[in-house]
Image 1 (cartoon, rainbow, N blue to C red):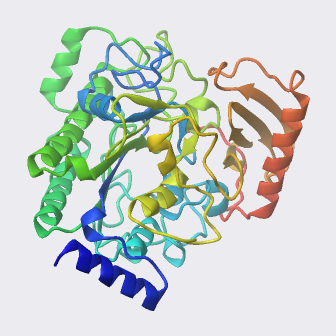
Image 2: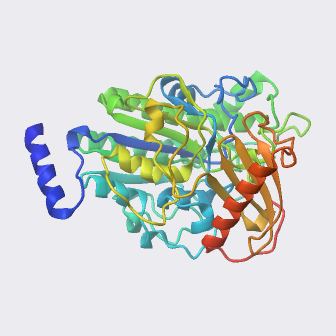
Image 3: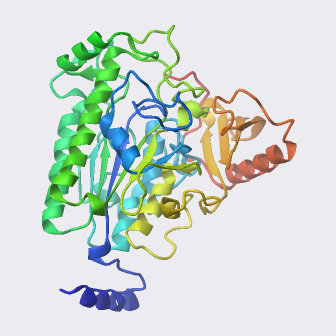
Length: 453
């Protein structure tokens, strides 16, 4: 079938069914690599080339660094939530966690809403979609119910090694299932490439979640390397390198298949790094330096995360400082797949495709200006707009009790409250956050505040 004939068929289908079918020949492959509990500065390359603390000289992550070096780094990339399952729901449905649930348990049923694989198939029915690795703790819908063609099913922390003691290092045969998740991902990629089908693969690794698992050889290598530069353990560093090796295998497979030039590889994590790691030296600098806070918190250390994209037309080594978030993926991937027109009024995200060619445009167009974060269980909510972030204390009803304003471009550690110096900006963001929290209903059960676990 010629490309001209395919275009004629596409136009005919568009006129009959009211949507645009992307040309198969022009449809890119998309791979979303989602790691678990990996902090913004926790790789060997710099997340921000102007901040020497945004990487680690002790860690070794050449594959992650390769994505950054061959693509674009988003220095202000965020997870939708400071906790894994709310983030995964948000990515799946293109919604803020305040809308789809801020805790593990939520009344939100993803299968009843627009989802990422459904959006891709709406843009082009030829897309084959697969999910490998960690799905989430209480997702209420299976991957297949949400539109995936293939998956590992209802998987969670226990699937990836969570039970038992939390020693500084556990030696196991398939640590965090990194090897087997990578194997299945590569088999799917290879099959779709050979079939000539465009594909979307979400590779949700279990590493580097709480229980440290790795091979004996990796542990010994880091024991010889000496003490870590931050408060993580030698075993944790080895686990991260093994994770990186899995990612490297995927990148190598794309090269071997000759499809790297037509494949977007997106790398991020589900929330910021933990504040403590079993076996880490508490006297060392905190694991998330230079950010304040950690997982569970709406401080930068809990939600600002590694965020890189490599793919067609993206300039190697480019840097974007416009804030983006995981719930932007659905509309972004929809546009990449050739999708046109609105998808759902529930979407909170916006496409950031335009940033690939012009990383300095003013902002991403979303239904509401700014990025919204909410965690009533911890008594926190936040909004990030431009260089400003309003961090609010809220009650169980999500009413704002007090707030601080930070310039998180110049003050990445959130040390100086600018509310008094910038009262108009504080008032503007306060009103915007208040309006949003009053507009949507958090479907998570109401719970008393508790300390992070």
